[in-house]
Length: 194
Image (cartoon, rainbow, N blue to C red; front, side):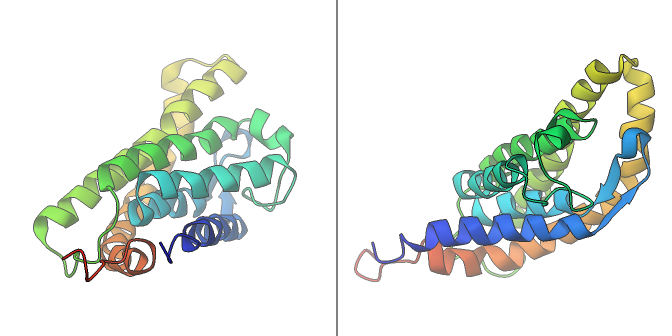
């Protein structure tokens, strides 16, 4: 298919978008856990591209950071970041992309406007994505620090929920509008197949 070469291009493009989010980071939590835009961009990539493509973009972003490219929050990179306090949250981006992407499904050129069913599915996908970022983040932070669940929840989740709710409200309409655009290039409708 003539559009097959665009899949790796979109994967790299969305990995770059997630990476650009490293410039917006406000440390507020213990161990410098920051408020970031990258979690929204990872969930958005999955909601726009679907499970496989969205996950590939997030994995590419994590690999780039692991190799030392400064794509993590605050312009950091390297394995030390992945093994530090924020490491579990970064791996949570992959879990978020898998979960949100599977719920959102592959985009289609037929998804236009804001139909209730489509918007609701993407809201559930994005919500699941944001929650899935916290699971490995909290578990790893507990293991790293030895702190109990309640303390880690109060330090690493509660302060970030209001910001994540705002990001969720932005993610859903962006995904609804951009999915058919991405589908036009990734999965165009073959007029002969109709």
